[in-house]
Amino acid sequence: MTPAPLRIIFMGTPDFAVANLSTLLQGPDQVVAVVTQPDRPKGRGKKLAPPPVKILASEKGIPVLQPLKIRTEEFRDELAAFAPDLVVVTAYGRILPPALLSLAPMGCINVHGSLLPRHRGAAPIQWAVINGDKEVGVTIIRMDEGMDTGDILLTSSFPADPEETAGSLFVKLAELGSRALLEAIARLKVNDLPATPQDHSQATTAPMLKKEDGIIDWSLPADKLHCLVRGLDPWPAASCLIDGQRLRLFSPEVIHKDNPAQPGTLVRAERDGLLIATGRNLLLIREIQPEGKKRMPASAFLCGHSLTAGTVLAP
Image 1 (cartoon, rainbow, N blue to C red):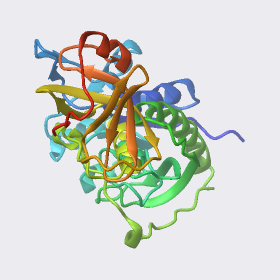
Image 2 (tube, rainbow, N blue to C red):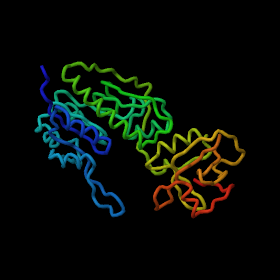
Image 3 (tube, rainbow, N blue to C red):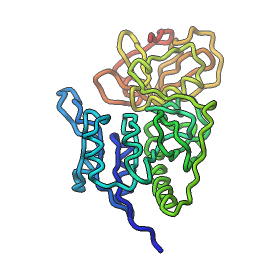
């Protein structure tokens, strides 16, 4: 017998969550409501902009809730009125209180963009790249009151691409998470998804990134900086100052060659990029973005800027 369709409340906010919501809408179950963060000011004009999840839900005619507070009896009752069987959470941005965790008979499950217990927190994908993880993936957990501490229901993974950026991995894991979510729900319906407690002793954190995290410390070895630059691409982007101008740095390559120059010294600036001394080996930067301008090949930047070997790149 085919299991009856579930009534699902989906909670999520950014683009990563959009992929999961889109997949649910194409599946056999019914998304009866969507909960997302309030509209936020965006861009230079600081106009209020809806979260990506709200845009999709509104297009599909699904009720959207954007509470300022989620720990109220009124909000719980508002959700309960939708009579959900299951709550699915993907990058919503808030820790749910017990009253919401127990709202649906099948509980709350979360799609997290890392292989838990590694990288608990708001930026797991970026930190996986920054830390040079050899394997990346997603985890479906049954949520509890902690931050990404719930029992593991399902994982899916693949070997990390050594040239991956946070931006490109984001797309891959959003797709992988969507497939894993459908499998998890299908197995939950037939009670075929045992839960495994996390090994909390192996947990690491993945806090939200800030602009300051992009400031480069050239004393680090080139392989560490290679991971950092990729992990901060596209935001907040690794950056430094050259002749007083802030440049964002992209498309790094490690050049395994010793150089006695002080870390942060420009060894050469040619069409293939900016070659920079680090704490160990050299780092070639092939793409840059001057402040207020678009990202461009280093060769394009050098057409209008003369950089000489020996220039020291300041943080």
